[in-house]
Length: 285
Image (cartoon, rainbow, N blue to C red; front, side, top):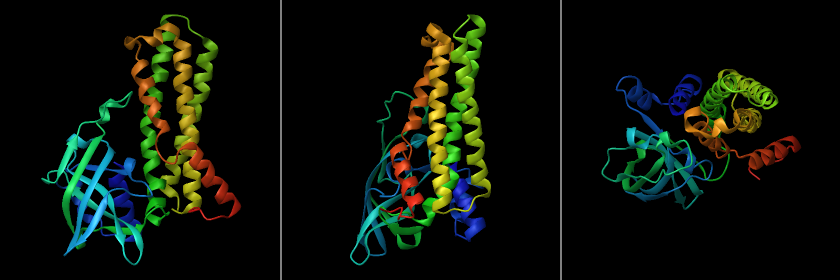
């Protein structure tokens, strides 16, 4: 979803030539994948220069929806003799013979995302198919757009898990008197989920991408993660022993919620970003 929204935002606001993936989705019903979970600023994989383009070898982990996707929006790193390590962005047809899925997604939670590894072994990407280039490991304008738009969408999924945990915990307390203080603490944490998500969505709709907006979004990403985890903890505590049974509707959601810790920027990385921004230091330090 966020890949589609980013492409639409770039076309509307910067005139970027993203009609290809947008038409693939809107007209042809194609489904986009993202390799953001294994790439972020450094990128991953190897792009070797050949005549007319690049030959790609990579292993992309956390490729959510891999079995059902048509086009993976991904990247690889080219060791440019002049500019040094350069990340190239492009789309990968999942039907290409050089692309396979390795079913590795045997996880604590979020099992339904099927975020298996995607193996790219020697795929040729023509020069005209390279959608963007950037220095590896450095903040780039594209990542400020991604931060502003993608993370409100990603964390809305966890807010949805919090919705379900809240409903299940209230239902459990109605069936059998639970810990009312814990239930009230859950309600307070849940209010934090709603407020932070609302502000994240506001920034996605009206913000201007850049280091300051990214700082705000990432601070909210840390806060909503805390509120989501606290909602989950307090829902389990309020339900008592009922929360331990799968039939209670809390167990799977509690496991799913734990994945909210692992998206960039993780809490310590976000704190370092915020400190550098406050001091006027380079965010690439």
